[in-house]
Structure formats: C-alpha cells, structure tokens
Image 1 (cartoon, rainbow, N blue to C red):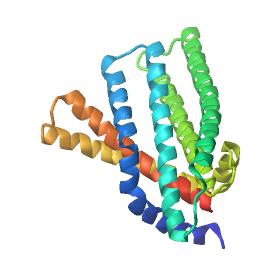
Image 2 (cartoon, rainbow, N blue to C red; image 1 turned 45 degrees about the vertical axis):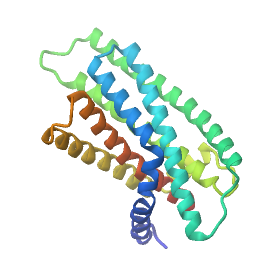
Image 3 (tube, helix red, strand yellow; image 1 turned 90 degrees about the vertical axis):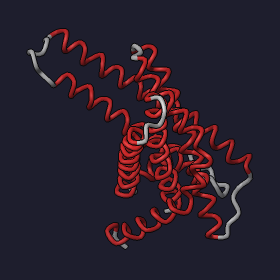
Image 4 (cartoon, rainbow, N blue to C red; image 1 turned 180 degrees about the vertical axis):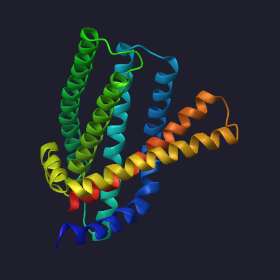
Amino acid sequence: MTGASATPGFARRFLSLMGEAGWRTVLHVLPYAVACGVITEGTLSLRLTLPWKLPMVALVLASLFIAVLLAAHVASLRLAVRAGREPAPIRHLFRRAWRIGVESATIGLVGAIAALALVGVLDLVIAAAPPAEGAVWPQAALRAIATLSGLAALLVMLAGGTALAGSTFGAVVGLADAGRRLFTLSERTTAVICTAILAATVLAILATRLSITIDAGPPIIAAALAKAVGFLAMIVPLGAGAALLAEE
C-alpha cells in the first residue's frame, strides 16, 4: 500500500481518536495547560529579561511535555480498549516515562544551548556590522530561530509521546526509536504537528476574542485562560498522533 493511499485512513483514525479520547485527555491535562497559560502570560506581562525568562520557558516546556505524555497514554488506552488488549503494569510505564523524560531533557538542553549560540552569533554579526536604519533582517532572523526552536520542541514532545505509547503493552521503546519512526512516517508526523499548531492558534484566538466580547474578568486572567485553551488544543492532537504513530 502506498503512502498516498494510507494517508486518508490515518486521517480518519486520527480524527476519530481525537474525538474519542479528547475529553478524557482534557480532564487529565487541564492543570498543566492552565499552568502553562498562567506562566506564559506572566512572563510576557512582566517583561522579564532573558536570564529570568529562560527558567519560565523551561517550566512551560516541562509542563507541556508531561501533558503530552499523559495525552499519549490516554489515547493508547483507548486504542487498547478497541483492540481488547491488556496494557502493561503501571510500574513499567512509570519507568519508561522517567527514562523518556531524561532523554528528552538532555536533547532539550542541547537544543537550548544551540539556540542561544545562534542568538549570540546574531548579536555578534549585528555588533560587527550594524544593520541600516529600518532593516528588518535581525528581527526576521530572531523569529526564525524562535520558530525552529519551537518546532524542534514539538518534535521532541511528539517523539516522547510516541515512545511512551509504543511501550504501552510492555515493549521498551526509546526516544531514538520513536524519532526514527517519526522520520520514517514523516508525512503523518507533519500532519500531526500542523494539526496541533493550527488547532492551538485558532482556539487561542477564538478564546481571546470571546473573553473580550463577554468581558471575562481582568485582562491578564482572560489572556492566561485563552492561552491555556490554546495549549489544550495543542496537547490533544499531539497525544492522539503519538498513539497512532506508535501503532503504525
């Protein structure tokens, strides 16, 4: 079967699993999404300097990672119920989650150092050859670094969820194994990540406009809750996608 003919089947199963496991996922990950929304809004509102922003960003990423692991586990259990299979003991899953978390944190640290190094290089270039007045390339380069860093973080989270989902029935799937699977199934991986980004963006915008329309309390609280909705909308597709990618 070719990839083109398999894609519609994957899309249907992906949407079906999101619908079936979505509300269960929300119940499990809601505290993490709210925490991410509050921390993100607080970091933006307080206008912290970079040394203070980095721990906040790390806390948000850690919370998101745990939420994605939980979402992948919930989605995997729904698939297990469909197939009539018995998942592995919870001790096995806790051990795998710890190991996957350590591997992901190591990769995340390397990625953060690389991103900071790129920002440092950009600063040196600007210092050596100041851009002409009105030049936009420094901001564009900084946005490109931030975008690539965000996509890399989403890939690591999806790989972590895929590794945990692949270990649901007693197997031992590492982050490297999951990464290779994501690369092999690159079209489906791209579809999952694009769905997560699109859902998060659309629902965060809608939640923000709704909070303005109904005057939902202080602006900072409304903004934090809108961001929490966006994080929820991102976590559900990542968890469902991780479970399905592990099953392929």
